[in-house]
Image (cartoon, one colour):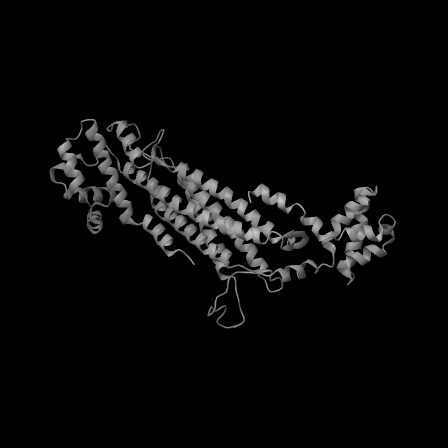
Length: 430
């Protein structure tokens, strides 16, 4: 089942309430740092720490007048401080507060997503091992190619998600950046030690250099990484959708008692959750374009990125969190039909073994193009007739000139194609 607590937790990370809680924490930490260097009396700091609070509804009322969210927040906090309010936000600019709190939110969101991916990896690993020896046909261009195993398909997914985990962890570290360096990043009105202190307390690192904002290539990388992970999920979901087609039906996403596939057709069992994952992945990719545009700001900063980020960052994190937590139960309850996989292997009447026969002719000394022409000719007969590929080969004079019946028979050993599966699984880390 979906971990609804996890989903609600991701939503809470991006709530206005939580954002302002982080902003308040930053303001108090900045006061602590300024007390350490003698800019704020200790008595004032104690009063600030005791009385600093905000009321989100009051902040919204003040913002109706100021048209400035950070000013409204500072005014509201200051209303609870009395004379000590003069020390609040001293030497800071709005983006010091907003960008640093945004970084905290991105790191927190990344932590949840990292945990999600680890859960999915565990499920993929279990399923890949279970179906390591379950033979099925591989398809290229949608056409039957050669035998593989369903476990190897899942091992590919597992290996890709391992890379996605590494990408997300890298992007998380890229967002573990704070900035309290003033209006244009020069520390003109704030000591650099304040930034160092606040960032350390928040488990962030100070930006090496900044303008009024943390540079948006970091945020873009984070958005791109989430889109890449979402696109991997789309890739996996699309494979399930293709394998669930009625004429294939090798796998099927779970279908529960009482579930309705169609309002009109009672027989329908549709891959609706996989389709939902595919659809949501499009939103993640669309958000990447916005993130790329956000990188280019006028001079030391304009505000064109801000409104868009308030949509694309929480939306992308929430969407990806939802997608992973939808895909995990799909994989846990995936219906796999090995008998249908065996049936699929025989649909092309042995043509999937054509390369093996080609190579056997080449071993007998035939040039590749000559051998290829012979085997392709035999294969085309199978496409056009009802004959079995092995039968066509056995009665073809050009083939029989070089291959005995036993040689041809040996080419149709399906175990030959999957003999290295253990080695592949070991490379993947199983």
